[in-house]
Length: 215
Image 1 (cartoon, rainbow, N blue to C red):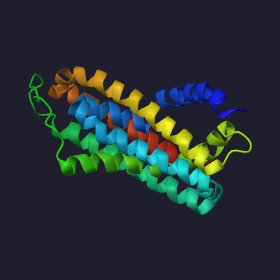
Image 2 (tube, rainbow, N blue to C red):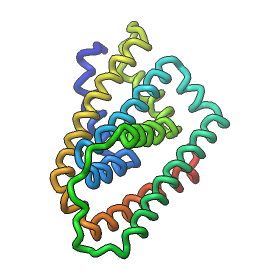
Image 3 (cartoon, rainbow, N blue to C red):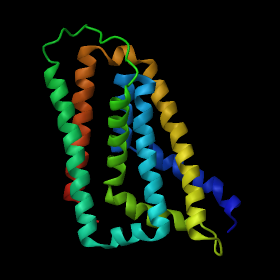
């Protein structure tokens, strides 16, 4: 199979995978709704940095070791589930804290994230991706299907990962831009509370599922 001939199938698979609901989508949607497009950018970049690192680890064979190791898989699963639960509970607390604020109040235009806020959003995305043991198993199974026989595994995987990251950044930032256009509505206190409550519930449910399910 030629690499160029496999690219359309690879891109189609990436688009379908990116559109599937999960913690990444929940983080991006909430961030874009409450912080606008610029606020979602570091979250998206953090998620994609984590994805690229997993791809390189898969090419180096380390992701396969993680996927095969009971201890490593369990540690990642516990860390990932715990972090999702932490994020979800934090959103619940935010919804509870705002319950006495007048429902019609507007939060105003989102301010550009400072260096600390940017780093925090980037770090959240990075940890959510790196602490997901399913990502390791997925990378090990996904990329070899598109690496032609005879081509260097590491270099080809790194190249395909760049393409996946580029496609996902375009998709996620387009989604963030669309959601950000309705930001003034999302930042109404009543709507923000419901969004925090729903987002928190989704992340807690995903965290509990990650903690409970095996391989």
